[in-house]
Length: 324
Image (cartoon, rainbow, N blue to C red; front, side, top):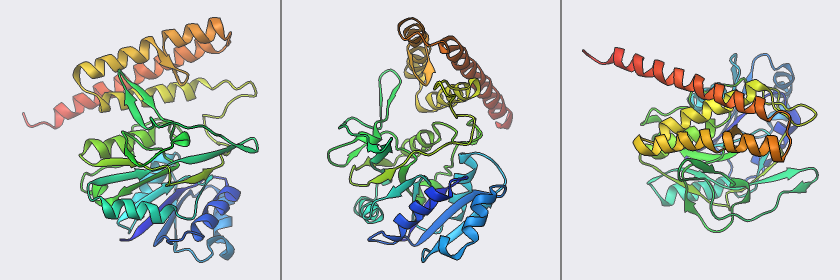
């Protein structure tokens, strides 16, 4: 079984160095390491040109001229030669047994299409602690429970995986013609692209497994995109709008009929901090006295409306392609 590791990167060479060093220290070395970067990222281009940057890894460098993580990941998938692709972020450092445990899961279970695990988050000089057994699952009517960074216990099936630590059987992707969703908005991380991708693999009939032993250390680094926060911690309108847009596309694809209606009603009436519904608007505005609450709610509703327009256009396009 041949294993490729895929790492998208942008303007974070010190983080990338730590990630590649961790890959070089794996007990089971990867057969291929694909690093995807932007052509206009002069810092990364110069760093990758140095011999010491590649070390002894079987490194393939892929340059793209399109912004966004979705474009980077799709370009990386096209360059993968392995049977398994393990994906991590440039600000993550896989622990020594990461590749070996991933390989074991896929080798032992031919019906497993994706494997993920815990990302131990390092923040403000400390590691976030906690213990959650219910991770990576949808809860009725449409609430996504992540908590991949706090998962404990044994391996179990989940509904979706986290982008900093996820791997897939290439036959599950290629045979199902699955790629990262190019409809998603954002100039950088394109929030929820990992959840949308994992869910597509699961909906095509493959199992997704979460195992806390598949571990990476995660050092969340600065973002150079629309999702950067102000000094007061508030988010830009476009960042909130993009997250709401992406989430609504995901809910539409994930659920059908009554369940879809319930999920969309829930996100509009209740919501959460990333996509405000009426209940969270009142909580943040009245109880927490957040001055940005009304703007965030309006941006969330704007994202929902834009998603409806995209879905309507897609439906019309599908009708046009259907033989009359």
